[in-house]
Length: 124
Image 1: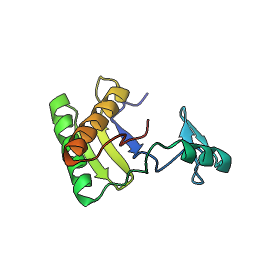
Image 2: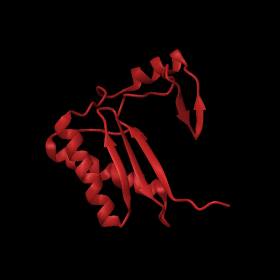
Image 3: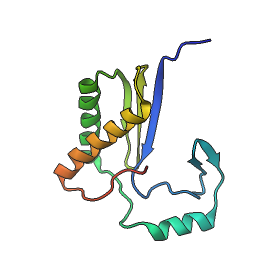
Image 4: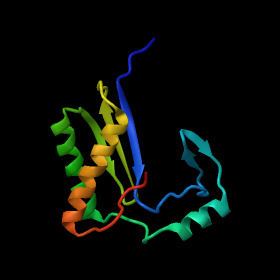
């Protein structure tokens, strides 16, 4: 069997890719097709406007993730922060990937709160 060399991690900003989305969506690791009623229901449940990062905010998140990766001794191969989502490629580590994602999201949230963003920033 081949050796795991790394992971690609992706998450979205709050409110920008809801369950039911016309592009499809992922739930519990399963890709689902669009569901207009589900998307509308989720839009109505939003407690604030969708979060879209501007150029400065994207740079802040990128730096926060870089810093967190160094702090956690996680090898960062690539990172790309967009207005509505983040892609990170990390090397293999003997750790929980869910914990790594949580730590990266927390680092991004912390720096954005210092910058003035309030409330939820990321999807689950």
